[in-house]
Image (cartoon, rainbow, N blue to C red; front, top):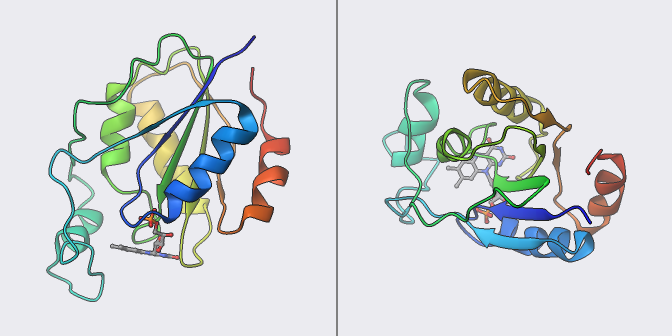
Length: 161
Ligand SMILES: Cc1cc2nc3c(=O)[nH]c(=O)nc-3n(C[C@H](O)[C@H](O)[C@H](O)COP(=O)(O)O)c2cc1C
């Protein structure tokens, strides 16, 4: 039987709640991703143009390291990644996560939670990160899942192994 792993990053637990429901519905394993340098409340202040997230998210070249505690994904067919949307795109550490996972041969699907922004720019961000790594990966269309009722329709749209 195909195996699925849900990986998520969540700064304030919103994505975490959705990730748990997604994992349960997929009978998947689940693991949390951490930033090498955790984000403080001040770091997350998007009203402050000098906050850490404001600077990182607006710098196209910024690379934000994840903590090296992420699981070995070699035994999984499907990888599902959940994240918040920051300034219309995933936190830049999601690019570092993609760099560090060997996604060759995997089915990949991403979801986010947000204050209302849709998944369009996040999808482009993810597809670019996959391309930069030359991974042979099936990238499903991601979605913003802000309500539990949005989970089932999204899961039904995926092509997972
Ligand atoms: C730094 C920062 C930037 C954000 N930018 C956006 C945004 O561009 N669009 C949006 O709809 N929500 C934005 N949000 C809101 C989050 O996406 C939303 O609260 C999300 O559900 C948080 O998930 P979490 O609790 O798992 O971290 C932002 C939040 C933060 C902290």
